[in-house]
Length: 352
Image (cartoon, rainbow, N blue to C red; front, side, top):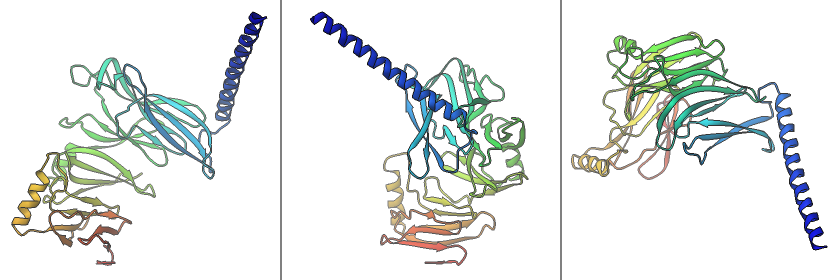
């Protein structure tokens, strides 16, 4: 009788597990069917988000969980996964209305940050109907510390708001072909190239540095980025979408590295004259002490990249932090020595 009871319990457990697996399979099938019925784009009532986790594997690859939720209730409708993601990258994914764009690195050890045999990095697109495809081969077979792929692109990228163009950085600093490249997302053809070599030849007042990818204006009309040397920005560039007209906008050479700085789409840069950040312990405090002994003040200065107009709007002790922040294209908020916030309107030329 006892043996019979054990057998019955065992059968019940097997049926329970089987039922659970069946239900899981049915739920997953329902999710896949929902995705297949979609157009590939987010609906008006939907919003997407993502979470990246590092897998507990030998190479420590990353996985991203893309979650699609109801915009109003925030209830999740479904999710999907992107594997072999660059975990340490500051910008591994972009979410857009009709696609999720991600850099995937194969045969790479993310724990020790080392390429393995057969290494390659690629930019992929996933849509919200479950489809996926490789867009661009970024890098392949790094040998002896040198890139083995002649058309090497860095793993940084931007996709235009209308999802028509991909922005990439080609080659690397010091090479003649080092450039910002804009590709047509459908054809993958290069439609615009901004070579650093050409920028320096046409604008000798620009200090050499790396090309950084930036952001689009809210209306999608312009793309802004910078040229930088370590922690110091040397110039900004602005590209008009469609016409590809490019403005190169050098920064004043008297802006030290590590100072408080804020930039706006209106072409204004607010910056201090004494560093507040440094990679070496005690350096900032020493600079502040020296400035104080000389009777110098920390100043917050406004500079217009287009007109080159410059004006000082506030002064304080060398240790003060202005914490400048643009609340609109023309309005700068900063902190006074007494801790109060103040707004400076570049259009009106006075504080509020």
